[in-house]
Image (cartoon, rainbow, N blue to C red; front, top):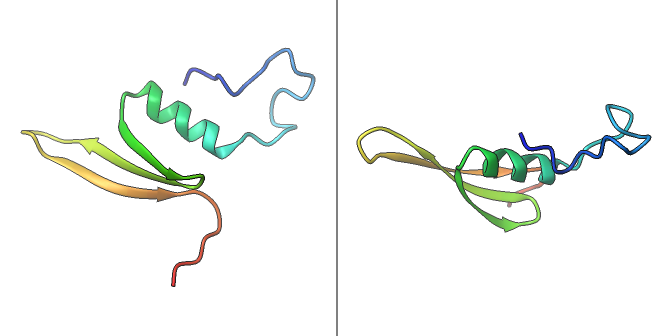
Length: 68
């Protein structure tokens, strides 16, 4: 991870302060060159590479959300 959401100069650096989950997910997906679309603030549509031109798409949602 590149850690762009961490500021080591910040006195609250470390586990004393909760990290923004969206920043962590964005950083991970970007640093691993994974294709994704952010549908809204809490939903990510991802594509994982496979073998022989196959791939897997999945929806990843952050937080408490209810679907009807």
